Length: 374
Ligand SMILES: *Cc1c(COP(=O)(O)O)cnc(C)c1O
Image (tube, rainbow, N blue to C red; front, side):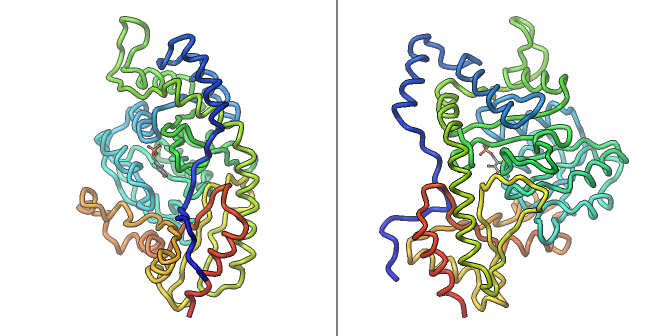
């Protein structure tokens, strides 16, 4: 096999048709409104709100600000129980709100926070649970909500991987007290950089929107210490045009998902990450785990060979957040309490996955992987 001529990355963003972007941009040039909740922003906000089937939605300039503000709006103190198997932003959003993270291990297969371990971490300082729907696989929201009710805790979902996902016919954005989405270029739906907060709570939604705009409620009435979380008009246009391409992108990714599953079926030591049956999936990632014992080679070996062939899959999430310098001093961060998370961080590999990936490229990626096996 020859290496790919061009680099094959783990993802490629949806790229909208330039003429369509230009057409929409002309409206902006006519009005001169570049930002501050103008037409394009408001159109996108209502489109995304309808798509996600949520009661309230606020767009943001990125997912991290969205999460920081969602948490700020809840006005909580003390400790928050959180998964270490996530992107750094999940943890940092707590730190920026002066909240102490308490790490809770994930379930072995779903890699979502393990509800069975949450209660043991609760004390009188605990104020919330921050869970992540990893790889678009919904957390066990029923168990989490039962625990939250029992101990009067808030529930925050990082839904950065779960745009459009539904579970038991319910929108993912309606779970818990508040959810955050990311519209970064590497995510399924994107506005280059961007994000959103969703909630079913009307007064919380109002607070989120005020915090997004420097704490300004009405002109000359500044009611809280907000920051700048605004999504501008140009990026909103990119969102609007990308939005039209979304269903086609998902359809194509579903095909590619099927091809990967066919080619990798029965390969000992390659476990395909799977999502529960009651879920409407969004196909944001295609994830495998390399079981070194069964596969005969480590993930490191696999990555080295892929690099030779010009393929760049991605480790997720390595290292886990509990091992970062800033968090490893926490008592709950000890590796022995977080073995499912740690093991996943050593084995998980997200394979190249995007609509423009060709069938023969998918096959070759699988052939390369199989060629590494001992
Ligand atoms: C992408 C991502 C974020 C951060 O979102 P940005 O829009 O890049 O700020 C947070 N959490 C998770 C799980 C993510 O994947």
